[in-house]
Amino acid sequence: MDQSLVFRAAFKDLLLDRKAERRSKGWRAVLYFLMFVLPAGLYWGFYAWSSGGLRFGGGDDAVAVIRIEGEIADGNLASANRVIPTLRKAFEAERVKAIVLSIESPGGAPLEAERIYTALESWRQRHPKPVVAVINNLGASAAYMVALHADRIYAGNYSLVGSVGAILSGWDAHEALGRVGVSQRVYASGELKAMMNPYLPMSPEAEHKARDLVNTMGKAFRAELVALRKDKLADGIDFGSGAVWGGAEAKRIGLIDEVATIDQVVKTRWPDLVVDDMGPRSGGLPFAAAAASWMGEVIAASTARLRADVSLR
Image (cartoon, rainbow, N blue to C red; front, side, top):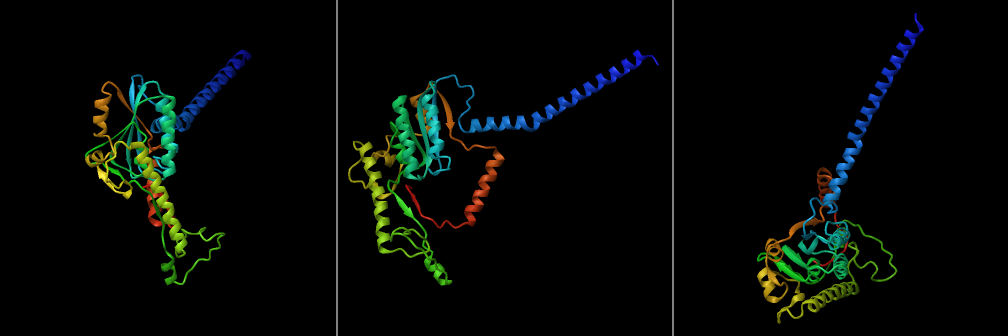
C-alpha cells in the first residue's frame, strides 16, 4: 500500500478524533453551564433583587419605600441587620429624593428598634432627605418607636397605633412539674440570677425586680415620646398605659400627624416621583422560603417556649 495513502488515512482519523473530542468538551461545557453556572446566576439575581440590592430601570427620581414588616427581632425580616443596609442604600442613592417607612408591625425587641432609628438619624445627617412613616394596619410599641423618628407620621383611619410601654414575659411551670414529682436543682451566684427560670417559683425579690425592669423601660419609652412630640400630644391622656388607638383618634391625641394611606401620602407629596420598593424582602428561592417557613411553624408548634421574652409590644 502507498505510504502516502496510509498517512492520509491516519491523519483523517486523527482529525475525526480531535473533532469528536472538541464536541465532547463543548457538550461538557454546556452541561456544566446548565447545571451549575446558570442556577447559581439565577439564584444570585433573585437574592439580590429580593434583598433590595438589584434594581431595574432605576434612572428616574424616586421615593424609596422601606418596609418594616412583622416582629422587630434579630433574624426577622424587620431586624436591624436587614433594615439598616436598605436605609443606607436609599440615603446614598442620588435618585432617591424622599423615603417612606412602610410599617406593618406589632413591635418587638427595643434594641433592634433603637439600632434602626439611630441608623436612620445618622444617615439623615449625612444625606438630608425627607423621611415619613406610614402605619398600615398596625404600628405598635417598638414599631411606633421607630416611626417617632420620622419627620411626619401617617396612619389610615382603621390603622392601630400606640402601645407605648414594655412587657416582660415568661412561663411558670414549677407547679405542673411538682404534680409529677419532678423538680430542678439550680445553683446561682446571686438570688436574682435565675429569676426567670420557669421551673422555679418566683421569689418576692425577683417579682419586684421584674416589675422594676419593665416599669423603667416603659417610662423611658414614654419619655422619648414626650420629648419628640411634646407640642403635639393632647393633655389628660395616659400614653404609657399600653393602649392602642385608631388612626383618627391617634391624630386627635397627637400620636400621628395626619390620617392617610401610603398611596395617598406618595401621590400627594411626591406626585412626580416614581416609587421604588426597596424592601427588605425575604431572600432565597420561593420553594426554599416556603419550606423554611413550614419547618419553622412545625418546630414552633411542637416546642414549648420556656424562656423569658423582653419586648416592646
